[in-house]
Structures are given as structure tokens and as C-alpha cells.
Length: 229
Image (tube, rainbow, N blue to C red; front, top):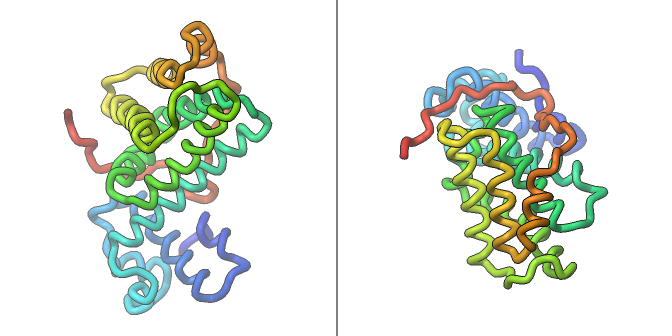
């Protein structure tokens, strides 16, 4: 019997179609956690959700599409939690540093989900655009506050995001240690025009403990190997 998960909880007050789609997504997450992305099949997802295969195809074209929907949904939930944790912080320098370090903490607290996000961020445009929207907002905030002295354009934002993903890759592959988050945050702040002394102080400031959680989802996802360098 499938337990109610994140997506079913979010859809509980919506229509029947939305609740059905959410139940299929929760079933997919449970199977991905148990068997990995490649091994889980459409038939198994539908069976766990207690639905016919035809119902699956009403809502998703194929397994790749449900993987995209699940990963995007989880990424949005984690982004929401990160944003919520910074709701009382207006200083863009603090926000940018904290967001980078918190995101990289994912590699320490939930490395299997981290691997899934790493793969999906490169594969799915919707996920990249969602992540970049949060990033763009904080960079523009810093520009408006006078803290960032460089032009905030697509080249800068893509370069900034690539630094984060590169560090995530290094953490997951074991090439970088836990200091990578602070190091990357400091480099980013300096790239944005923050004076070196302040960039170092902010990026290395101790953060209050924050455990990112995904309600009712498995804590571990069976990973596919991260590509070697």
C-alpha cells in the first residue's frame, strides 16, 4: 500500500485528475528510492499507485516525463525551504552566500538526492530555469542594494550557477571536502564585486543548523553512478 507522500499532500484539495497525477508521482518516488531510476518501470509505478497503465499515460508520456516532474517538484520544495529559511534576511550578500552553502549541504545530508538533482539539472530545462529564478532574484537584489557592482546578465547568472553545480559534483564525487561551500561562496561574492575581507567573513560565518526535509519521501534514493571526471 502506497503511503501518502509530498505530491499527494500538495494535491489533496485539488481535483481528481491532479490527485491521480500526484499519486503516480509519489509511487514513482518510492520506486526510484528502492530500485533506482533505470530499473523502475511504468508498469511498476502504475501498480504501486493501484492504477492501470492506461491511467499513467493519461498524465505522463513516458517514464522520462514523470522523472522530470518528480525531480522538479522536489527541487522546488527544497528551494522553498531555503527561501523560507532566509525570509528575515534582506542583505543580498548574506542571502547569496547562505543559499550556495545550504545547497551544497545537500551533498552531505542527502547525497543520493544530490546525485539525482545533479543529473536532472543538466537534463531538464524547467528545473534549471526554476533554480535560476531564485538566483536571479537575489543577484538583482544585491545590485539594487549597491552590494554587487557587476552587470547582472545571463552570462553572469549561468557562470554563477555553474560554479555551484561544479562544487556539488566535486562533493558528490569525493573530490572536495566540506569546506567547498564556503570557498565557492567567497569566490562568488568576490566575482560580484564584494570587497575581499567582507566576502571572506560572510562566506565563512557559522550558519545555524538547518536540515532540509522532504515530507513523507524516502531519505535515500538509490543512485546511479556520478560520471567520473
